[in-house]
Image (cartoon, rainbow, N blue to C red; front, side, top):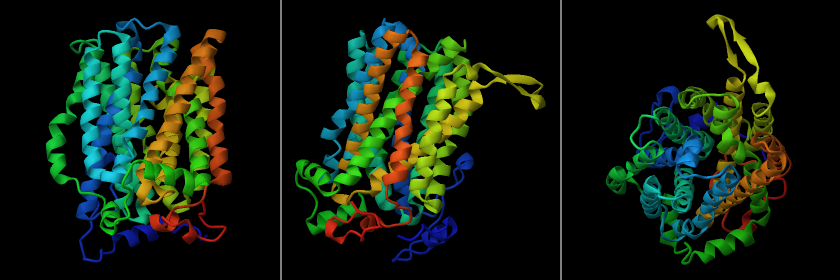
Length: 466
């Protein structure tokens, strides 16, 4: 297969007029730069998909940031903490029952319904009287959040041009991460906000206000509409599931292995980081909030950089590099090296090494996630693309849940969350090796070329086969 086109050529290709001479222009995004040249329809899809991801990230961030306060408020013991996080993560498995509906009834309808559902359950978590009620609400919220994230990605991937697909997906992830930054700002006031962490969870009900205009603005995916018109779309959720496991088993195995092992090693360190800063480094909630908001703004640029570099130099090479660097930096993050004070001459003061280590770690972490996210949308046909994304999400969820369980086991044996996390990071090295050795290259190719419905039309060996 030929090398991917340079990004300049891809942008030029993306800027030409559509068959109906529809004008294209980029959306300025301030700190995040700008979007690729989009048609009016593509701009609409991009903005709505980003909005959905923004609130989803806000909801997810709360559990990470306010973990210490939730633990205290619901009287959750240290020994039970890992089990609670495991159960919450397992909620994503339920998305496998929901997401395939997008392949049967359409992306648009399911995206709107899942936004409503995960928002309601996150809001209900604010009034949790017990830990069990809180866990139940969070699990149900994850069922619909997992489906929403997958469908939003699929709609965007199916609508944007092949040459800038990585760029668009990177921007989607970066802008959605702003929700995490807003949660970090809100967390800074957790001691003054009415009802503390419960008040922050209640704010998650805001998306219900914007769901009505979304119903009018969001179009259905053209690729889904074409399949529906041709009568080739699935009639049952079991049809895409059967096709997924039978048509491209090699691709499915690679993605599942990468997602499972990456989340097994990576999820515990991410969830415990706020707690780690407060307990091991003595940081206040305001200090944690400042790092997440300002340092995180730099770190999440990895989404955009990864998207654009992968369009230019290829998904496989860039993804493997990012996947290998993220766990190495995470190990230093939870080691004694992170307590080292680094002089900053221009400010005439010193800062903790934990700050730059975390920023660079976050950069490579989100960059690797962007690459595997792009792969999940590219390696499977339209008729079961949403289902494939759901299976990948479940693989990551299962890996993350096992990671939390193993963290609890190691904590009871070692007596330290931080050392337990360092041991688990070994599993996070595997996805980079798998990607480098086995993943096909997809940058710059149309979805129908990468993953035709009929495997007989796949490229000859050396291309992007199954």
